[in-house]
Structures are given as structure tokens and as C-alpha cells.
Image (cartoon, rainbow, N blue to C red; front, side, top):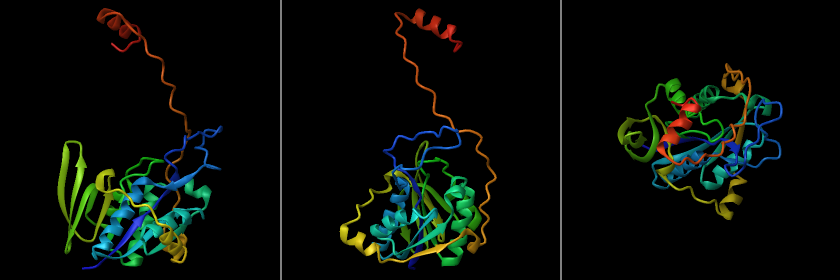
Length: 254
């Protein structure tokens, strides 16, 4: 059967940017900082496009939650091969407190609205590193999930996922519809060509608000403080094992 795929694309601070904490310790500096699509989301888009090229997926819907600038991220997904986009409009202030639970409720509502039967997400975002949205989305939809996917094969109404676990690789079979979160080794995302970038400008991006989907995005978590990681201290050379043990005892490690 031809699948309709929904792919989440999150706008994050670019991976090459050095993140700075705000002076008031309420978060990180985002004004004037380069943003791009979360790298794991790029892999999810690439996998959806490859499935479409194999005639397994009939339509790819790229979804992003956040302020107006998120439309740039959606355009990137459209240039890679997604068919249309949905921008869930959330103010910049509210977006700062938008966590995995709120996003998963939005995605679950869109899945039902768009009659989607395959959800592809990055395993985590590089800004919060939560690794929770896919799992929560599967729970809300009561769908099977394949997380940390390094290989995906669709066969009729089943999908086989090779997933990376601490002990190596685990192969599981899911019955569609399903939620899959992708890992680094699944594929290498393509670069959008200039013709496709031009075509993406003409593709449709629907604008909706969480209230239109019946979703409450109020946060249950309050950030008390954001701190820079402690500076790494210089190492100390020791002459012998006895000196090492003595230093460790002095520092209270043993």
C-alpha cells in the first residue's frame, strides 16, 4: 500500500555554532545566531524521500513547530523532496518552553487530521537532546515504534527496522502504521539542488496554530537556571603510582 509519511523537522542552532548562555541564565542566546535543520531530522527527510523514490510512500508532509522562521526549515525539507509543509505557528516566547510532550501531542493531532500512516522523526534534537518525542508520539497514537533506526525496510503492511542498542544491533518488525526515529548511520542526506530549491518556493506550506488542533502547549516544566559547563582543569603529572594514589587521596576520590 502507498503510505502517507509525516516527517518532523526542527529548527535548531546550527551544530557549528558555539552556544552561549544568556547573562540572566534563563536560556541560551538565539538572536543573530545561525539556525538550521536538526541533523537527525535531515536524515528522517532523506529516508522519506528514498521511500517515495521506491514508490512506497505517496506523499511526504514536513512539519515544524515554532515561530515564523521555521518556514525556512520547512522549505529546506521541501527542496530535499517533501511534497508540502505544515507550520505549527508558536510564538518565539512560547517556543522556548515547547517540550517533547507538547510537540508529540501536536504531531499526533496532525497524524489523525492528515490520515498519515508513517511518522519519521530524528531520534533526538541537538539543542535539548531529549530523545523523547518519537516515543511519546507512538504512545499517544498507540502505534508500534522503531527507535534509533539504522536500516528501514518496508514490506507491504510491515516494516523491518534494524536499531542500534548498547549491545550491538537489534532487528524488529512493526505492523504499519508506525513511528520510526532515525539514527546517524541510516543514510547520508542529499544536498538540495538549485532547481529543487526554486521548486520548493512554489510548494504549499499550511499555517496552523496548536489551538486549531485542540492541543494545549502549556508547559509543566519550569527552567530554573541554565549554566555553562565547568571549565576543565589542567592535568597534573605524577612520577609514580604512589604519587598518583597520594593525589587521589588528597582530592577525596579514593
